[in-house]
Each structure stands twice: as structure tokens, then as C-alpha cells.
Amino acid sequence: MTNPYALALHGGAGPKPGEDYTIVEAHLEELAKEGENLLKAGETALDVVEIMVANMEISGLYVAGKGSAPNTAGDYELDASIMEGHTRNAGSVSAIQDIVSPVGVARAVLDKSPCVMITGHGANLFAVAHDFEQIKNSENYYTLPVGVSQADIEQHDMTHGTVGAVALDIYGNLASATSTGGVFGKPAGRVGDTPIIGNGTWADDDIAISCTGTGEYFIRAGGALTVANGYKMAGDSLNEALWRLLDEVGRLGGDGGLIAVSKSGEIAMAFNSDGMKRASVSNKREVYATTFAPCR
Image (tube, rainbow, N blue to C red; front, side, top):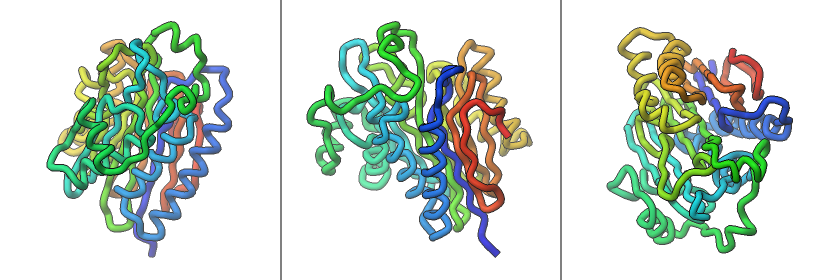
């Protein structure tokens, strides 16, 4: 009998109706298949979520990593976080600049630092000290992700995007990782929910969660811990727990989405935006990738 495993990915909430996200869905499907193979082969949930997010960062298809846009000062400030559920070990970076894989640096913070979060110039110093690949020429590296135009950036309308992954491995352990280039038109130094452990990212013995959306609203609504507490303490189903947070985000005027995996291998995804680029797979369900279809 195969031990339960599960994997869910998101490439950001808030896609534009009418845009073609076929290439994104194909990429998410490919990653989900790769992640499934890794989990079946015995890779840990922590390693798998890092690999999934790092691949999304370097693809240029999403508002994270290579697909990020500059802030109003012209700098690229990125955020990422990662967490292992059964140990509660976590690492994150915020406002890190010109590093190829922010989630990789977040993992190094988890593994090699007594800190949970390192920010700004300090995050860059930490990345360089641990030999992470730097971007030498930002003008030639960064690209517009699928569904985002130059006009979106120039409007400074705080259009959002994030990537994330949650996983259950065959050992029964959970992990989550999230990475973002932030919202378009953000001021210098702006940090959203993504690098905040317990807000944009959370994992414990029972649940792993990754959020995407307008971070200010997720912070004000309580973030991922609202989901975890609803699931573990209030008796919510996994889907109800996601909507406990998302309904509050909506009530406050925000939008976005989130994904979660439970210790039993159940997967839930929810969004109150027009869609959410996402994929999932488990020992009980085949790979499924979509953008606008209702959650199932």
C-alpha cells in the first residue's frame, strides 16, 4: 500500500479574464508531475516545495523571481519564505535584490541561520555569503510574466502575483513555500504577507498553507494561521478553513487565494479573484492544472 502523498501549487491569484494561460498551466502540470515523482521516490516535503517554487521563480512566467517588476524607485525587491511542519523550522527573506532564487535563500536561513527572517541589505549579504547566484544585469534578466503588460506596471495599481507550493511526503510530514515579486507599483521597501511566517506561509503537523493576493489584506485578516486555527481548533473542514480567511479578506476589500494540504493528504484550493493559476496531485488524484475553473 502506497503511503499518502499530496502536492499543490499556485502561480498566483488575480489572472485576467480573456488572457491565455495555457503555457502557465502546462508548466504547472509539468512541475506537479515532477513533484509527484520526487515524493513517490522519498524526497521530503521540504525539499519538494523548495524545488517547485525555485522552478517557478526562474521560469519568468509568474510574478516571482524572473517575472518580477521594479518598485517605484526602480529596484527589484523580492520576498520568499519556507516552513517545515513537524519541526516548525522556518526561514524567510524580504526585500532581497537581484538574487536568482529568493526561496533558496529562505531555505538557507532555515538551515544555516538562527534567524527566521532576514531583510533588505542583510538578506543580500547573507545570500552572497552563502554563494547564491546573483543577477549581474537586471535590465537583461527580468521579464514580464504571462498576463502582465507594461501598462499594468505604469498604472501603479498594486496588481498582485505570487507562487507557492504545499506538500505532504510519504513520511507524513508537511511543508510550505511561497515567493513573490510583490505587487506592481509598490513603493520601495513595501513588504506583503509572503515572507511573514504564519501569514503568507504556514506548516505544522496537521496542515500546510500558501497564500497569494493583496498582502495587506491577508495580513489584516490574520493570514494562514487563521486557516490553521479554524481547521485544528474550530472544527472547520479544510475547505471551510480556507474560506474562513478568504471571506475576511473579501470583507476588508481584498482579493486573492490560497492552497492547503492536510496530514491525511486532502487538498483544498480557494480564491475570490477571477481565477488562480494552480495544479495539484496526490496518491488519490491525477495531476490537474487550471486557471479559471471553479475549485474542486
